Amino acid sequence: MSRRIAVGADHAGVDLKDALAQLLRERGFEVHDCGTSGHDSVDYPDFAHAVCAEVGSGRSELGLLVCGTGLGMSMAANRHAGIRAALCAEPFSARMTRMHNDANVLCMGSRVVGPGLAEEILSVFVTTAFEGGRHARRVGKIELGAAPTG
Ligand code: RB5
Image (cartoon, rainbow, N blue to C red; front, side, top):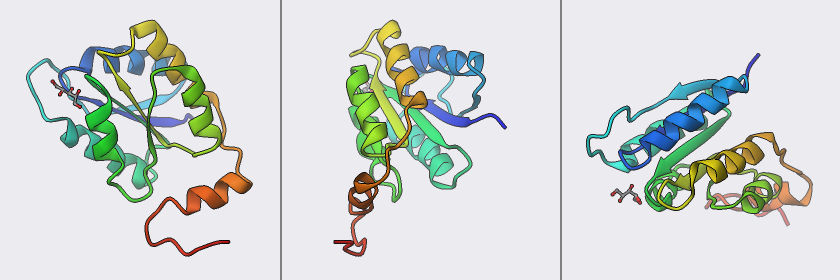
């Protein structure tokens, strides 16, 4: 069964989102596109919430969010319980946030990274596994109200 990834963007990120969605499809991923689909001005939290609902429900394994800077998307996404959204502008952070933080949503800024770099960041993000172990304990403590685990 193919891995499913939910993608979303505002008007500033839609072109990059569409290009990255196409790359994901070419690599065999199932893409659930939460929009937006044109260049009309829209509000980035609407798309962050749609993608996070997909990931939070387990319907999609991972999420991708693109706006102008990635900042607004990451702020909105991280309001969701169980969502660990990482804003990345280079591949090292994308690798580490999968390995150590079990990040499940990647945020990028279309006005920050070019298309080639964005492809590399996404590629690393979707192919890197969580290391678990001591990192699982720490990730468990991210959620507010989580029981202390030592
Ligand atoms: C839209 O102009 C811009 O504010 C948005 O794409 C994003 O960068 C917000 O964080």
